[in-house]
Image (cartoon, rainbow, N blue to C red):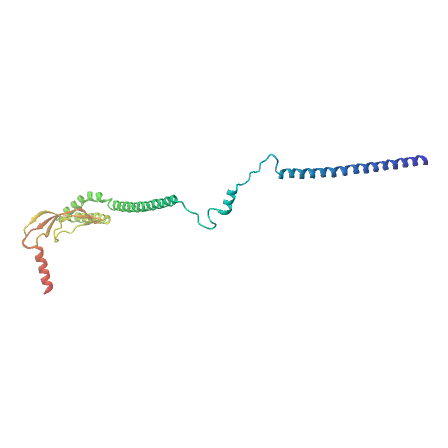
Length: 257
Protein backbone atom coordinates (compact mmCIF):
# COMPACT_ATOMS: atom_id res chain seq x y z
CA UNK A 1 0.00 0.00 0.00
CA UNK A 2 2.78 2.38 0.96
CA UNK A 3 4.77 1.39 -2.10
CA UNK A 4 1.87 2.13 -4.42
CA UNK A 5 1.45 5.59 -2.90
CA UNK A 6 5.11 6.40 -3.36
CA UNK A 7 5.08 5.29 -6.97
CA UNK A 8 1.97 7.40 -7.65
CA UNK A 9 3.59 10.49 -6.05
CA UNK A 10 6.82 9.91 -7.95
CA UNK A 11 5.02 9.61 -11.27
CA UNK A 12 2.96 12.79 -10.64
CA UNK A 13 6.07 14.81 -9.80
CA UNK A 14 7.82 13.62 -12.92
CA UNK A 15 4.75 14.53 -15.03
CA UNK A 16 4.61 18.07 -13.59
CA UNK A 17 8.31 18.51 -14.14
CA UNK A 18 7.92 17.52 -17.75
CA UNK A 19 5.11 20.04 -18.22
CA UNK A 20 7.27 22.82 -16.79
CA UNK A 21 10.14 22.02 -19.09
CA UNK A 22 7.82 21.94 -22.12
CA UNK A 23 6.35 25.35 -21.16
CA UNK A 24 9.80 26.94 -20.77
CA UNK A 25 10.96 25.51 -24.07
CA UNK A 26 7.87 26.80 -25.83
CA UNK A 27 8.25 30.35 -24.44
CA UNK A 28 11.95 30.49 -25.21
CA UNK A 29 11.20 29.49 -28.81
CA UNK A 30 8.36 32.08 -29.35
CA UNK A 31 10.12 35.22 -28.03
CA UNK A 32 13.22 35.13 -30.21
CA UNK A 33 11.09 34.51 -33.29
CA UNK A 34 8.81 37.53 -32.72
CA UNK A 35 11.66 39.89 -32.03
CA UNK A 36 13.41 38.75 -35.17
CA UNK A 37 10.24 39.34 -37.26
CA UNK A 38 9.84 42.86 -35.81
CA UNK A 39 13.42 43.68 -36.73
CA UNK A 40 12.92 42.45 -40.26
CA UNK A 41 9.73 44.58 -40.68
CA UNK A 42 11.46 47.74 -39.43
CA UNK A 43 14.39 47.21 -41.75
CA UNK A 44 12.02 46.68 -44.66
CA UNK A 45 10.13 49.96 -43.90
CA UNK A 46 13.36 51.94 -43.78
CA UNK A 47 14.49 50.38 -47.02
CA UNK A 48 11.22 51.33 -48.76
CA UNK A 49 11.40 54.91 -47.50
CA UNK A 50 14.92 55.21 -48.70
CA UNK A 51 13.90 53.94 -52.13
CA UNK A 52 10.98 56.38 -52.30
CA UNK A 53 13.03 59.40 -51.29
CA UNK A 54 15.94 58.67 -53.55
CA UNK A 55 15.41 59.29 -57.28
CA UNK A 56 15.49 56.27 -59.44
CA UNK A 57 18.07 55.84 -62.11
CA UNK A 58 15.36 55.90 -64.81
CA UNK A 59 13.97 59.35 -63.84
CA UNK A 60 15.55 62.38 -65.44
CA UNK A 61 16.20 65.58 -63.45
CA UNK A 62 15.14 68.67 -65.45
CA UNK A 63 17.27 71.68 -64.50
CA UNK A 64 15.73 75.19 -64.27
CA UNK A 65 17.16 77.55 -66.91
CA UNK A 66 19.41 80.24 -65.56
CA UNK A 67 17.51 83.01 -67.42
CA UNK A 68 14.23 82.12 -65.74
CA UNK A 69 15.88 81.94 -62.34
CA UNK A 70 17.40 85.37 -62.78
CA UNK A 71 14.06 86.79 -63.96
CA UNK A 72 12.21 85.44 -60.95
CA UNK A 73 14.87 86.62 -58.56
CA UNK A 74 15.30 90.08 -60.12
CA UNK A 75 11.78 91.23 -61.04
CA UNK A 76 9.60 89.31 -58.63
CA UNK A 77 5.79 89.80 -58.83
CA UNK A 78 4.39 92.22 -61.43
CA UNK A 79 2.18 94.18 -58.95
CA UNK A 80 3.82 95.62 -55.81
CA UNK A 81 2.43 94.48 -52.49
CA UNK A 82 -0.21 96.89 -51.19
CA UNK A 83 -0.59 98.81 -54.47
CA UNK A 84 -3.93 99.07 -56.34
CA UNK A 85 -4.13 96.83 -59.39
CA UNK A 86 -4.06 98.58 -62.75
CA UNK A 87 -7.42 98.72 -64.62
CA UNK A 88 -7.46 98.22 -68.39
CA UNK A 89 -8.81 101.17 -70.47
CA UNK A 90 -11.58 99.00 -71.92
CA UNK A 91 -12.90 98.35 -68.43
CA UNK A 92 -12.99 102.09 -67.65
CA UNK A 93 -14.93 102.85 -70.84
CA UNK A 94 -17.34 100.03 -70.10
CA UNK A 95 -17.78 101.34 -66.56
CA UNK A 96 -18.58 104.86 -67.83
CA UNK A 97 -21.02 103.42 -70.34
CA UNK A 98 -22.78 101.47 -67.61
CA UNK A 99 -22.96 104.61 -65.45
CA UNK A 100 -24.62 106.54 -68.28
CA UNK A 101 -27.08 103.73 -68.91
CA UNK A 102 -27.88 103.60 -65.20
CA UNK A 103 -28.51 107.36 -65.10
CA UNK A 104 -30.83 107.10 -68.12
CA UNK A 105 -32.76 104.25 -66.52
CA UNK A 106 -33.13 106.19 -63.26
CA UNK A 107 -34.40 109.23 -65.19
CA UNK A 108 -36.89 107.07 -67.10
CA UNK A 109 -38.05 105.50 -63.84
CA UNK A 110 -38.64 108.90 -62.25
CA UNK A 111 -40.56 110.08 -65.30
CA UNK A 112 -42.73 106.96 -65.28
CA UNK A 113 -43.42 107.42 -61.59
CA UNK A 114 -44.44 111.05 -62.17
CA UNK A 115 -46.69 110.04 -65.08
CA UNK A 116 -48.30 107.31 -63.00
CA UNK A 117 -48.86 109.73 -60.12
CA UNK A 118 -50.51 112.24 -62.47
CA UNK A 119 -52.61 109.45 -63.96
CA UNK A 120 -53.69 108.31 -60.50
CA UNK A 121 -54.68 111.84 -59.46
CA UNK A 122 -56.57 112.37 -62.71
CA UNK A 123 -58.47 109.11 -62.25
CA UNK A 124 -59.36 110.03 -58.67
CA UNK A 125 -60.54 113.45 -59.83
CA UNK A 126 -62.63 111.95 -62.61
CA UNK A 127 -64.06 109.41 -60.19
CA UNK A 128 -65.04 112.11 -57.70
CA UNK A 129 -66.53 114.18 -60.53
CA UNK A 130 -68.50 111.19 -61.73
CA UNK A 131 -69.86 110.49 -58.25
CA UNK A 132 -70.57 114.18 -57.77
CA UNK A 133 -72.64 114.48 -60.96
CA UNK A 134 -74.02 110.94 -61.03
CA UNK A 135 -77.54 112.24 -60.22
CA UNK A 136 -77.41 115.11 -62.71
CA UNK A 137 -79.55 113.45 -65.38
CA UNK A 138 -82.12 112.28 -62.82
CA UNK A 139 -82.45 115.80 -61.47
CA UNK A 140 -82.70 117.15 -65.02
CA UNK A 141 -85.65 114.82 -65.67
CA UNK A 142 -87.39 116.17 -62.54
CA UNK A 143 -87.17 119.81 -63.60
CA UNK A 144 -90.41 119.66 -65.63
CA UNK A 145 -92.16 118.43 -62.49
CA UNK A 146 -90.91 121.49 -60.61
CA UNK A 147 -92.06 123.72 -63.47
CA UNK A 148 -95.53 122.16 -63.30
CA UNK A 149 -95.74 122.78 -59.55
CA UNK A 150 -94.65 126.41 -59.97
CA UNK A 151 -97.23 127.11 -62.73
CA UNK A 152 -99.99 125.47 -60.66
CA UNK A 153 -99.12 127.50 -57.58
CA UNK A 154 -99.32 130.76 -59.54
CA UNK A 155 -103.03 130.17 -60.20
CA UNK A 156 -105.28 132.04 -57.81
CA UNK A 157 -107.62 129.82 -55.83
CA UNK A 158 -110.42 130.40 -53.35
CA UNK A 159 -112.67 128.38 -51.08
CA UNK A 160 -112.06 124.65 -50.96
CA UNK A 161 -109.27 124.86 -53.53
CA UNK A 162 -107.18 126.86 -51.09
CA UNK A 163 -106.55 123.80 -48.91
CA UNK A 164 -105.64 121.84 -52.05
CA UNK A 165 -103.19 124.59 -52.98
CA UNK A 166 -101.55 124.44 -49.54
CA UNK A 167 -101.14 120.70 -49.93
CA UNK A 168 -99.42 121.24 -53.29
CA UNK A 169 -97.12 123.82 -51.68
CA UNK A 170 -96.09 121.29 -49.04
CA UNK A 171 -95.34 118.62 -51.66
CA UNK A 172 -93.42 121.13 -53.79
CA UNK A 173 -91.36 122.25 -50.78
CA UNK A 174 -90.48 118.66 -49.86
CA UNK A 175 -89.43 117.88 -53.43
CA UNK A 176 -87.37 121.08 -53.71
CA UNK A 177 -85.64 120.47 -50.35
CA UNK A 178 -84.70 116.94 -51.39
CA UNK A 179 -83.29 118.11 -54.72
CA UNK A 180 -81.36 120.92 -53.07
CA UNK A 181 -79.72 118.41 -50.74
CA UNK A 182 -78.39 116.60 -53.83
CA UNK A 183 -76.86 119.86 -55.16
CA UNK A 184 -79.66 121.62 -57.02
CA UNK A 185 -79.89 125.40 -56.61
CA UNK A 186 -82.20 127.87 -58.44
CA UNK A 187 -80.83 130.89 -60.31
CA UNK A 188 -82.06 134.31 -59.17
CA UNK A 189 -82.82 136.29 -62.31
CA UNK A 190 -85.42 139.05 -61.82
CA UNK A 191 -83.86 142.42 -61.00
CA UNK A 192 -80.34 141.31 -61.96
CA UNK A 193 -78.27 142.24 -65.02
CA UNK A 194 -78.57 139.90 -67.95
CA UNK A 195 -75.81 137.26 -67.95
CA UNK A 196 -75.57 135.09 -71.07
CA UNK A 197 -73.87 132.38 -68.99
CA UNK A 198 -77.03 131.87 -66.92
CA UNK A 199 -79.85 133.58 -68.79
CA UNK A 200 -81.58 132.98 -72.08
CA UNK A 201 -83.28 136.12 -73.42
CA UNK A 202 -86.63 135.24 -74.91
CA UNK A 203 -88.15 138.71 -75.13
CA UNK A 204 -86.65 142.24 -75.28
CA UNK A 205 -88.88 145.07 -74.12
CA UNK A 206 -88.22 148.77 -74.37
CA UNK A 207 -88.56 150.33 -70.94
CA UNK A 208 -87.67 153.83 -69.82
CA UNK A 209 -88.16 153.18 -66.12
CA UNK A 210 -85.52 150.45 -65.81
CA UNK A 211 -81.95 150.06 -66.88
CA UNK A 212 -80.90 148.39 -70.08
CA UNK A 213 -80.05 144.67 -70.05
CA UNK A 214 -81.88 144.21 -66.80
CA UNK A 215 -84.02 141.10 -66.33
CA UNK A 216 -87.55 142.25 -65.68
CA UNK A 217 -89.44 138.97 -65.89
CA UNK A 218 -88.73 135.23 -65.65
CA UNK A 219 -90.66 132.75 -67.79
CA UNK A 220 -88.84 129.60 -66.70
CA UNK A 221 -86.52 129.26 -63.75
CA UNK A 222 -82.92 128.23 -64.31
CA UNK A 223 -80.98 125.84 -62.10
CA UNK A 224 -77.42 124.98 -61.14
CA UNK A 225 -76.31 121.53 -60.06
CA UNK A 226 -73.17 121.31 -57.93
CA UNK A 227 -72.18 124.75 -59.19
CA UNK A 228 -72.56 123.73 -62.84
CA UNK A 229 -75.24 125.15 -65.12
CA UNK A 230 -78.05 122.63 -65.47
CA UNK A 231 -80.56 124.80 -67.29
CA UNK A 232 -80.46 128.54 -68.14
CA UNK A 233 -83.32 130.76 -67.09
CA UNK A 234 -85.72 131.96 -69.80
CA UNK A 235 -86.20 135.68 -69.14
CA UNK A 236 -87.44 139.00 -70.51
CA UNK A 237 -84.78 141.70 -70.80
CA UNK A 238 -85.33 145.47 -70.80
CA UNK A 239 -83.85 147.43 -73.70
CA UNK A 240 -84.68 151.02 -72.64
CA UNK A 241 -82.75 154.26 -73.08
CA UNK A 242 -81.17 154.12 -69.67
CA UNK A 243 -77.91 152.26 -69.25
CA UNK A 244 -76.34 150.47 -66.41
CA UNK A 245 -73.53 153.02 -66.41
CA UNK A 246 -76.06 155.75 -65.54
CA UNK A 247 -77.13 153.69 -62.56
CA UNK A 248 -73.54 153.39 -61.41
CA UNK A 249 -73.01 157.15 -61.76
CA UNK A 250 -76.13 157.88 -59.71
CA UNK A 251 -74.95 155.50 -56.98
CA UNK A 252 -71.58 157.24 -56.91
CA UNK A 253 -73.22 160.68 -56.69
CA UNK A 254 -75.42 159.57 -53.81
CA UNK A 255 -72.39 158.20 -52.04
CA UNK A 256 -70.50 161.51 -52.44
CA UNK A 257 -73.40 163.63 -51.14
